[in-house]
Length: 330
Ligand SMILES: O=C(O)CCC(=O)C1=CC=C[C@@H](O)[C@@H]1C(=O)O
Ligand SMILES: [Mg+2]
Image (cartoon, rainbow, N blue to C red; front, side):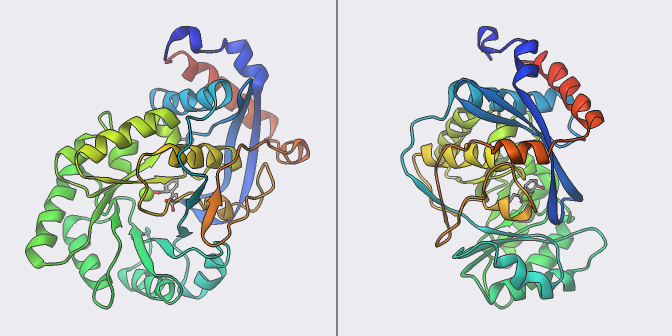
């Protein structure tokens, strides 16, 4: 980032509010989502790297928050974005209740390969979801070996297709091998990369290596809306489609995701930006999802909600220290 465009450490601290949002169900092992929000001259930005991320990696999330709050969104090409339902690794009986939070969504992403669960849990959950939507994708968060992925994806496509399997295995080499093995068997499941893009030094490597058909792209880890749009343009050159997703963002971060999706030259697949429904409380009135789409609009947090959801003094100072440390890497 141009050093002159980086607000001073004092300016950033003065612009910050730290919140702790309770979640409705456990998702990626967490039940409370913490975020530091920045209020700048162009609006609000969100800095919420997961706690286990190191400072260098988390600095990209700060760059993104500063872009939102000091620069604002890029020019839009559309005003509403189709979104998918996101189904955590719940029991099949909980599926209707989860899907009800995504009114009109015709696509659902289902978490699979959860630690402590088995393939039969995944099969039951996916079957329950298929009763309600047209397109199902699964996300294993890198939890399968190549052999496990072949077995699971074969079983999961026995009765109906999958739109794609997101990060079935952890490494790029495994994804390449899996794609080859699925092709040999005639199991037509497109592969999507998430962590192989989000946590990689070179987000294009996975697509160049022939490891993925679809790229899951998230605004904050990529360093902002403009960085996401630039990457999507490069990915299109390799024939990969993109799906803009949330990083379990508050309403502010979802706003940035919607603005980035709105600025893309092409948008074919539903975006994973409906995760506001996974939070029990949010910093702004929840966006109404109608007919499976969300409207693109700037978000201003509600002051009463910010006050009510304020993080503890200890967690607030932890986030402010992290803000200072990450700023040093911009
Ligand atoms: O893509 C979606 O439908 C929602 C976003 C989502 O699933 C995730 C958000 C944040 C962290 C991740 O573990 C998880 C993902 O792996 O995609
Ligand atoms: Mg994922």
